[in-house]
Length: 357
Image 1 (tube, rainbow, N blue to C red):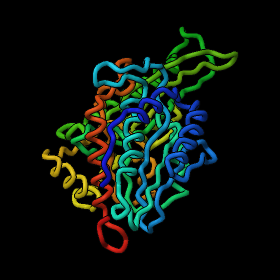
Image 2: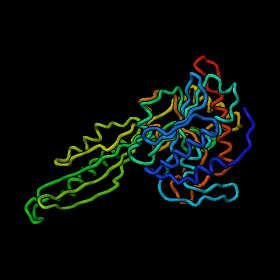
Image 3: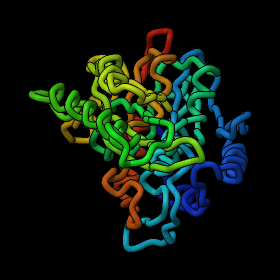
């Protein structure tokens, strides 16, 4: 492994490029250009993802991150050893660590491997367009998803997420009419049925196994001949979620139409595949006991899992409790530790010839 001159220059530059979801184009082009200068082959694909590769071996190691952030700028600044800025943790910190970790490898450690950096657009919104596009374009052998886990922990699972829209429409009637029920009542009845179903399912299960519904919006209105009610619902689903039963609890209410906006199943890593073993070994070599995390959110891993049935984990420096907050920052010692762990993992991964790098 090569010696590294520790510097936050790359990460700071990335954080200074404000790139909220749907507005990543300028950053994507700039990042591709910067990677070309560093010796990568890089371009921007049809949907705006930054794609870069280094090495030409037969074993493809995908480093899957996202270049978008939630909206809301955080003034970029250093306070002691802490770098503040939107994306410092979620998830430009991981993306920058990917780049620097690959560049730390010497020729022997890179032999037989191709490192594929995938900087996706629109990870922070419901339809993860960047990951949806690239999952059909590539077939990697290993995938590290760049999300903050902490430098000494690895994320080995994410819950799933189903987003639904509920709607009831009816001809307008006077509220004094006999047996009148407003559309809002029908939609609320469907929501209550879903809550009851989830509460029963969740009893005795761990948080990761539970199905957790949220009513995220509710609107009513009237038109010339109709009145209506609409609700948006999201359900954080566990690995054993019975999707048909969830939908049945909603559609059992007469007149309520249910539309599935998006659905991603829960994902989890094998506990003894080559990628997980490499992370455990790298962390032990750093003198720490590996921590394996299960997260209740989602990531681009959920989007690519069904197409890429290969070893996948999520990893990145930074404290995920700072995600999306006005106080988002990363400690540079944590960032450097993440680079060191990642670089060792990439060196340990076997090639198709069966030998480690």
